[in-house]
Length: 126
Image (cartoon, rainbow, N blue to C red; front, side, top):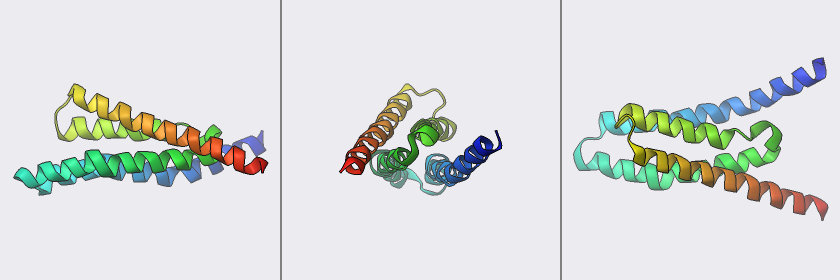
């Protein structure tokens, strides 16, 4: 029992930095965009967030999750949920378009996780 608990704690310790990074990117960055960048510049920053930074981070989170899928399988989901929370808090609560973005980020992260795990298994066999 103690050995299993130790493994769970070690897994959480490895996941905490990724959860913090997800919170910063998906919660703090939209707040910064809304608070400090006004007018058309704010729209440009949001485009960069939604179409560049967030998808790239979702893919990186998925690749990280592939290192230990049993422990990190929730990381792509956490990233998508934090994105949804951040956009609904800082832009428009309940906006259905943000659900589509969250779904896309979830799919990108899950696909990256599965593809990376598959590639790791193939490389381990050879």
